[in-house]
Image (cartoon, rainbow, N blue to C red; front, side, top):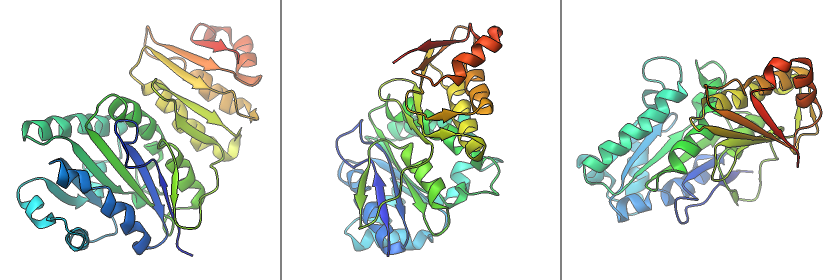
Length: 292
């Protein structure tokens, strides 16, 4: 049975402007794709659609079928439809730092061109194994959420995950990083294990579920995000994990070794991170451990 799940909603911004949809057939994909661009056409926002498996002509035809002047918008520079690979990694491996800067640059360009905002739809089949840098997507999503979508009122993004091309567990993990959750269709993804999500209104992450060798890539991505947030204080909420193995604890505690003058606050951790600080006292000056 076809499945479509949407995380987030198209409601009032800035709280609902970082969205994801997962789907298992083209027809159910089209529903959020057609709904999401409407403010671009009604409020004169610039919009980019980054295609991976959909021909650009099919995107234009779909929008035209639903009453949007996609051809005219493309001709006047309001709408662009380009290959996802050219947007996400044009010159080499996927680089979260470059992508965050690209958002800032694109917003400045849209403002100079007289547009009232910027929207983007990205097809994400490239996030699977084999694409250089794709393992850094879990680092990127929490950062772009905090640095762009929480702080700035005009941007919005919808990431599309195709269940036919990406394992359900990976999709659930990445979709979970997008705030909010609502469902289209009759089925829903199970919860990711572990779950990584951005904290609301401040730099940091919540991590829950069991952390062990099987999910080492998740811990690596979360730790990388923690080290790359630009804020002076970053929070890691560990009040929910049932278990964190030694390697996972080492990686998370090491994330506290951030830029000089910055601080990692670890909230409600299970026993392993505090015990690690006892064994390696040289790390104890970096994180602040807070019980809950």
